[in-house]
Length: 143
Ligand code: HEM
Image (tube, rainbow, N blue to C red; front, top):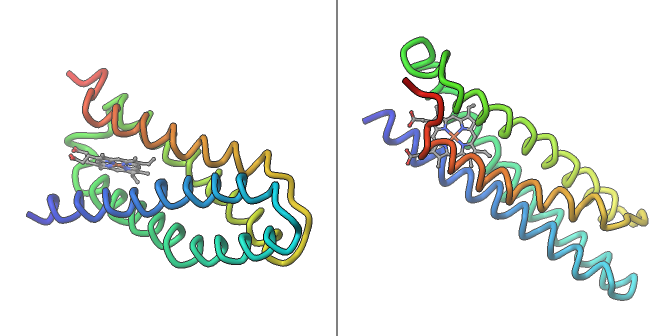
C-alpha cells in the first residue's frame, strides 16, 4: 500500500517537474523573439512557475523515488540494469532542470539570456521522461 502511494506521488511529481519544466522552457523560447518588455514579463512569470510547480515537483519525485529505491534496493534494484539507467537519466534531468532554473532566474532579473540552453534543457526533460517511462515498463536486463 505504501509502495503504491509512493508510486502515485512519484509519477505526479514527474508530471509537475518534467511536464512543467518542458512547458516553461519552450514558452520562453517562443517569447524570446518578442520585444524586451514582453521577454522580461515572460521570464518573470516562468520563473514563478519554476519555483511553484517545477522545483517542488522535482523534490516530490526524487523523494518518493528514493524512498521506494531504499525500500527494495537489495531485493529488486541493486542488480537491475534498467534501474541504474533510470537513475542516470534522472540525474541528467535534475542537472538540466538546474540549468533551466538558473537561466530563467537570470532572465527574470533582466540579464540577456540566449534561448539555446533553455531549448536544450526542455528537450532533455522531454526525452528523459520518455526514456524513464520506457525503462520501468520494459525492465531490460532483469532476470
Ligand atoms: C526522469 C525522471 C523519472 C521518471 C520519468 C520516472 C518515472 C517512473 C514511472 C513511470 C514509474 C512506474 C510507476 C508504475 O509502476 O506505474 C517509476 C517507478 C519508480 N521510480 Fe521513477 N522516474 C524517474 C526518476 C526516478 C528516480 C531519480 C528514482 C530514484 C531516486 C526513481 C525511482 C523509482 C522507483 C524505485 C520506482 C518503482 C519501480 C518498480 O515498479 O519496481 N525514479 N518511475
